[in-house]
Image 1 (cartoon, rainbow, N blue to C red):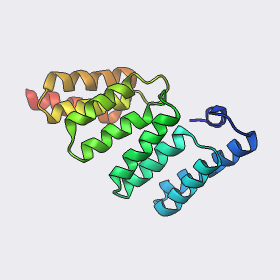
Image 2: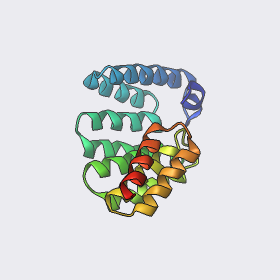
Image 3: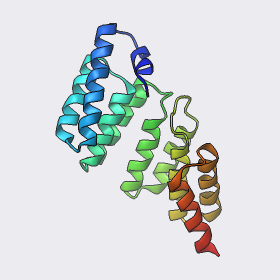
Image 4: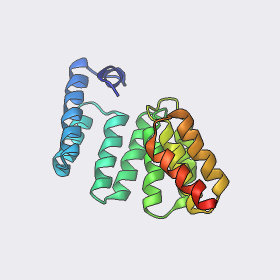
Length: 171
């Protein structure tokens, strides 16, 4: 995501949008340093200044790193309410449901992510859908999902490894 996309979202003063962007960037930096409480505080400040689907989604991602999966899902629902076209929160909800062992419940979320109008990493939900199908023993669907991920991103190492592992285990 770039600053332009962030600043174009929703109504509001340009000054507030820029401040929210700066806070979002600071939050992301703290998250990557594993300073999770500080990241949460900064994402919340960004959201209070100018709410965006990205900030809700990344706040949820931070909560997931803290083991707070239900709160992560809650933030993704807020992101979807903010921008239903943004694909990341759909994929993230599915991934969090996998963590909870709720495989069947995860499938429709990955399908929604696949069809989202705005998604920078469309290969991700295909990989995750493949993971679900593999766990359920649906080998053909898993292989198809991994191949779709690789079609979208030929350099997607996790998809390549998953496909190779599954194909070799079936031989």
